Image 1 (cartoon, rainbow, N blue to C red):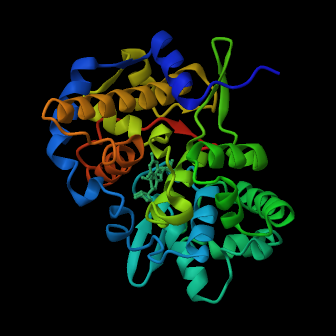
Image 2: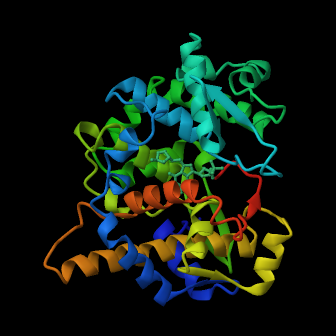
Amino acid sequence: MEAFLSPKDSARFIAESSQDVLVEEEGVRRVAEALFDKVSAKEFSLAGWKSLHELNPQAVSDDAVNWVFLADTLNFSFWSEHEDCKCLVKYRGKMYSGYWALCAAINRALDDGIPITSAAYYATMTLEQVRHVFRSDTDVPMPLIEERHRILKETGTILLEKFGGSFVTCVKMSEKSAQKLLRIVVENFPSYRDEATFKGKKVSFYKRAQILVADTWSSLEGKGDGCFSDISSLTIFADYRIPQVLVHLGAMRYSDELMRKLREGVMFHSGDQQEVEIRGCSIWCCGLICDHLLELYKRKGQNMSERINAVLLDYYLWDYARDHREDMKEIPIHRVRCIYY
Ligand SMILES: Nc1nc2c(c(CN[C@H]3C=C[C@H](O)[C@@H]3O)cn2[C@@H]2O[C@H](COP(=O)(O)O)[C@@H](O)[C@H]2O)c(=O)[nH]1
């Protein structure tokens, strides 16, 4: 059977023949120049994963790695039909939305003595128990709760049967290779197979699998089993926020026809040509931004390959998008209900 192109090769292929999404070379250069002084900031650092995000586990431990595995297994589709009517989770006096609502619900369950990060527990949860753990503090529930229940059972069962119930087993099997861990995840856990067919070719994005490897790297602080020698081989994670911020910053552009559909709130389906173009061009665009950033430092005699990679660029842009929601409201997200991002 024909193999899937890697996310990087998929992005190149998609960007070369994309019709409704364009990577703006001049915009890429401008974004790289604007980020030049940010590279040394904590928002662009591995340490920022913990220091900037109070809900992320702060310890270097097996529990933290299994927390990351659970969070990234459910890390998809948080957008709501109406911005002012969405799932919110209150945790320790603070309201969280979107992806952070998921993390707040996980930590709320742990505080309540529910072993939600243990595969032995989530492999056998009932739908009612899943509804309770991920309950919203508004009358808008977390989207796709039935799918989340199905994925918890499937993923938990596989982790128990093949890896002794802990994602740490997978990490150790990867022998400090990000690509090997990515392969272990995609080959063993079906819900992570974020793939499509584009103009006759089998392409992949592996958004949740790649962010799982990245978050594992961050949780282990890039040390010990998490000292991935090839972490720079990952691409950014093609979600629905990164495209929005790339268009907002002028590094990417949508055709008038696509922008009209986005503004009308048209629902796309995973694998649609325009949806694949948005995701593939986002990956390609960020790869070019990284390349240009490295080049700018190289011209100053500095090799920044340890400080600049797609993971850290992604984290920075994603957090930027979170903090500039109001500025970006003219650029609609693309709406897909799926389990991949
Ligand atoms: N590309 C990219 N996509 C990311 C993340 C994260 C969370 N990572 C955080 C954890 C540690 C890091 O420091 C990050 O701060 C979630 N998502 C995706 O966004 C969407 C949710 O958006 P909203 O509805 O606004 O919450 C949804 O598709 C989700 O899968 C990321 O980092 N990069």
